[in-house]
Image (cartoon, rainbow, N blue to C red; front, side):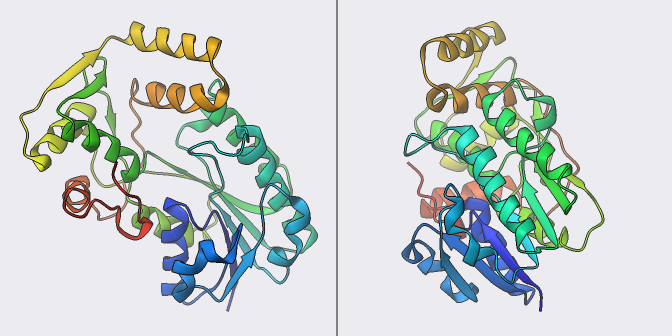
Length: 294
């Protein structure tokens, strides 16, 4: 039985990966800042290990006797004064170096779709800096590059519930976001895949306008969409980069950039965005991930 360590197990995707590994009868290990943070995943875990990826000295036990590492480590909402370089780059480097020292066979890293073409963005700069290190490490690896998550699209549902959705340009840019459960399947399949890079999106290619209209339909409101000109979003990005810290402008510039271009990856999966919206609208939570809708 192969032993797989999940780093980032308490995040949106990490939780689905843990569950999928358990379903496929892997020996599942996960790390968290405290074991209490992993408590709700305990039915799926063989080992819950207390460690901090930003502190290399805490990782020795976690990486001992491990065959594969799957890392979803990265900042989504910045906390503790940490930067993208601290987490998306350095924390993953801590994992990689310890994995090499402990004889781990394969390292699977979840980055972002087209991230290697978007290194002008702070979040992608850090992720791709690590991806380059991984590729040059001499270790067997795979980089999974998902399009947007369904959890990201929930923000559009939130706007619809508040009465108005704001889109960039004419709303015709397309994307195929993917559900965490479908993406977890891809990540687990990559353990025995020979692919080094796996770009992946969900089964439906939708324009942002279609996603907004879907959100209004689900919450039972008349569609009210405001289209923001591209120059305005570029100005907002410039001002944010000039007058705020990376913890403020990083998520802003990534969101505005991704919403102003086509982001269509190879299709995969069975979950539809409408079903996801309906479930979130009904329950207020994002399934296994337990992400409350604000």
